[in-house]
Length: 305
Image (cartoon, rainbow, N blue to C red; front, side):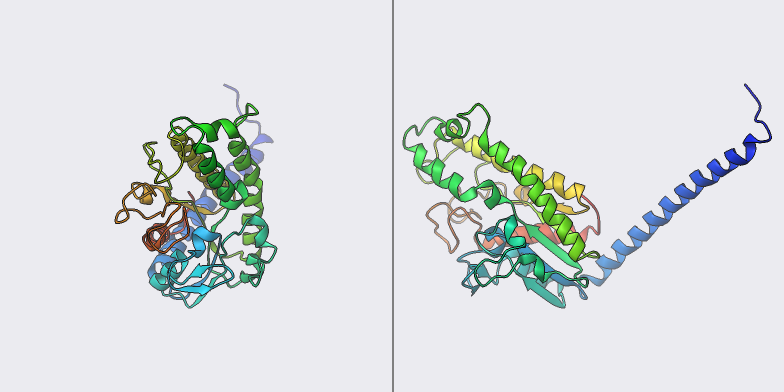
């Protein structure tokens, strides 16, 4: 062991001071964030300025009461339920059926760019987007059309994998930077807001079983489409984490209430809905379940994941 020289000692003391300072700073930041989370929970959102961004899964098309014909938006969608439960003082729901990430910056008919609803006073943002970028609508119609060719096989999976690479996996990967761009823009426009990325619910049986012809997909395509939905949600979870946003899992809370279930038990309507809702979309019970998932996340206080 060698002894420190007199000249080395000041440098070593400075390094120790820096390390201790960093540790104390981390503790202070942790305490501050814990206090902020507790304060947020205590006020229960009474002073919250809440903005909801999203597509049709947020908007709630055909669910009574429809309050925006252009966007097929319901006043019983999950943002409306969250706003009422949290007793927010300001609420803007600009979700719109058919929205893609581009509609954060571009209008849809009478619905302006969704990001324009945000401001420096915004306290809470929920955003549920990406399904239309991946191609939800065309995927459902394509798989339904192909199922007649091979009802017991997996014609849809073969179609999207014809090149040797699964195109839907590629679509999800290509959507990731779009979600990243959206979240960076949300933070820029609402720098103090708590941002929640809301995932998509369970559309098909989690065990991979099918229900042809009630839901007209080939039996081998049910697990394929289930896994595609899970990959989309995983991407949303990861991108949320990269962007200081919290992910809200709606798949788990809706598992077992997919579009194959009997009308009394399902929260997602099939391609021929029995309850007021768009095909392959949440009904009022589904929107309520997603609202509960958001409220549960909010109740935990600020945090990532």
